[in-house]
Length: 111
Image (cartoon, rainbow, N blue to C red):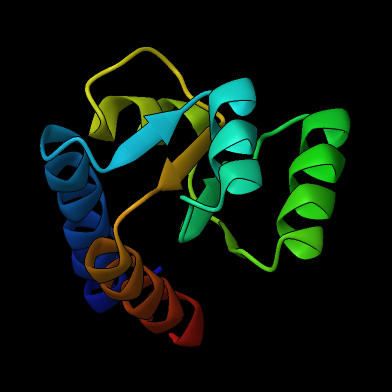
């Protein structure tokens, strides 16, 4: 990762924390899947180190409910960003935050 990507990654984690403080995120597999089912989730972030089982379940659920799913960071990075212990799945329930986070992820992946 180059320095520009690292800066963008930091910004992503900061905005994820901000979204959490604004009560616009839900974390944990069960809670995130419930948000997807209820139609509240606008974006789901899955850690790179999620188990195969969790990964398949979340991918399938997001696909069937047409929710954007992005894979990013480790469970420790996601947990730290939202001020909790390690987290594998985080659902963003606000369209504005979801759009900003998705564009930052696109930037990171492009680099």
